[in-house]
Length: 270
Image (cartoon, rainbow, N blue to C red; front, side, top):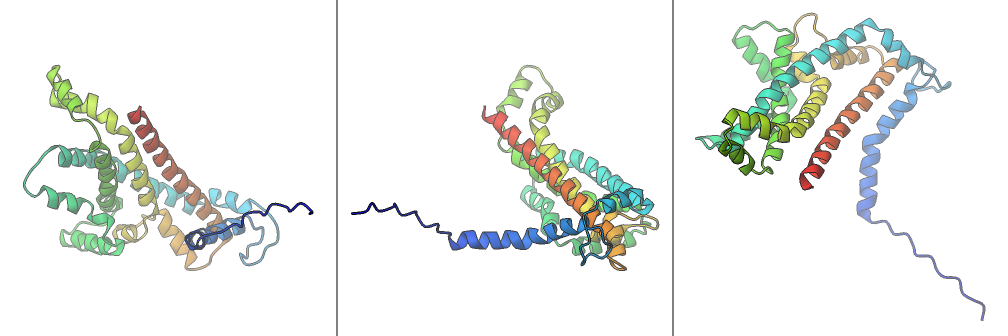
């Protein structure tokens, strides 16, 4: 009898894998198309004429884009800096102390993560109009602090709940004041979570359009607002290139935050 060749096992793909691949394609295929046409030499996005990086160099010489980027960075850095301080103190207070209405207050802290942006934008605008506060860059920063606080507080709360509280008590038994035990013992352990929360809040602040457009004063134009105003008239390839760079910067910030969180967990496990 001739030798029979072994049968190769059939590759079986479950419907869950097909569904997951379909969802990832639906989410990321438009980004790939955007990246593809950002290196198109033609000014018409629907027509491919050759590879070129001129659109990436073009917006670097665009004064309006540079000013919008500068305004966005000012807003994001300002709101994240405020949220880093108050969000950390808020998380520590909610975790370490018990007081009347604590659970209600804790749930209210995370509401900005659930409430639609349009609702926050309208509510903030109505409040500013009620107190007769003129719109400016400061009002954008104040409105962004609302949701940035939630991101920082959530990241710090997750971290602080897994820490050993006896370390702070041991530091105070050795003569440290409550502030010294917070600064020298607790804060270094919370630092990776603070950085991680700040990076996520920074990305969300840079990406925000609705809240900024409702609370921006005259002459203030953030980067998402500038992109939207240009898309309404004409979609040019330099906007494709700018969008690709923003996506890469956001992805880098998220990956950096996750890397910091992972390294912190690894060190704590050791």
